[in-house]
Image: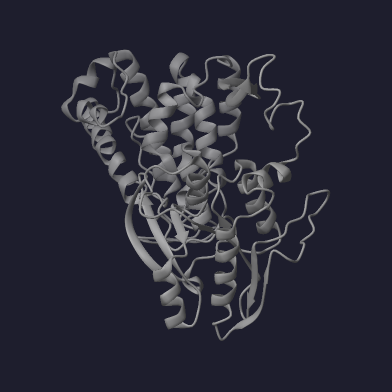
Amino acid sequence: MVYVSERPKGTRRFPYFAHRQGEGAGCPWHPASKLTPDEARAAQYKGNQVSAAHEFLCAELARLVRLDARFQAVEIDRTYIAGDDGQGGRYPDVRFHWKGFPECVCEVQLSNTFQPEISERGIFYEGKGMPLVWILHGVEPRLENLPSSFRDVILRHKNNAFALDQEAVTASEREKTLVLKCFLLKAGAVVETHLVRFDALTFPKRGLPYYRNMLLPDIEAFRARRRPWIDALKELKAETDGNWYADHMALPKVVEAFNTLPLAPESPEARYNFARLVAITMTLLHEAGGRYQDLVYRQMPNATAALNTFLSRGGPQQRCADVLRMLIDRTALANILRFTVKQHIVKAIALEPDQQVQPHHPFYDSLSWLVPEVFNDAVREELEQSGTLPGWASAVPVAVTSQFGSLDRSRHSKVNEGCE
């Protein structure tokens, strides 16, 4: 018998299975056991490292890749690929080479492959420049109750699940190339199923190949989240001439903007402080997009002046200094704002060092929902890997093209990239 425990690692806590003290001495995974991971795998198949089904699927994959006119070589679990700098090597399930393609690897997964193994194989083959595709057996027709190892593989393939069934074999023989069954998942459910040629997959520089990136964030949806706030800030400025306070949080468009948040502040004071943070954020984003618009004050001449003035106010606004530093470092503002901004940020942080808005703070979480291109690490990484991160959300000084035109960071021509 085992139970679920947890152990701290760094600043996080992770769950794991454990035996009660003094119990489980006969379990292969007991700390006192001398069983190796390879021996544990073999025990699943009565002394063999792989099952008969695994061997059959590897043989079918090898047969089908030979049908392609570009075929040059294929091997099944035979050639050892050495690791680098003490890293363990690998015997790929199926390793093949077509002319014009890098050497590719297919790993067949039937059992509950150990999670570290899944991660390590991906890292290993990526380091070798060998695209890796996991072939899952037993994923059809029920994909909603998969073991965690299958879900992990599917997630690494951008929510694509690849399988080799009879329909895929027939299509491969008809088209004279390797064709796989591809299930596309959204929110854990299959939304589409396709027969996909291996050469039709996307082979990214980082990560595993995929047919369609089902994790790609919807940038237009992010813009739609910000529009009510842009309208609210414009109403605030029109009603107060840029001099607004907590009691102005009752204005209709402001209430409407707060209602869009997944978890909005409740008190007028908290709403006021968050609205000020959003106002300076949107002002800075307009500058990053190439068209400055002051949404905080009556009319500051530029974003540098607006931010320096914002940080000169005490208390809650100074507690936003660290999150604004992140905004600058992760956007085109890093190449636009004057050096004095960094000085003001450092001073503001020094005045409120223990009260800074950080991840998991309610203000940060709401800001992350409004501007995930900057503050949501998972969204930002996905956009960067797919090459779709907007130019205003990149600190790299490159020329970018927007729906409104071209923006050359070296000259910073005033063109809005549509951060609204």
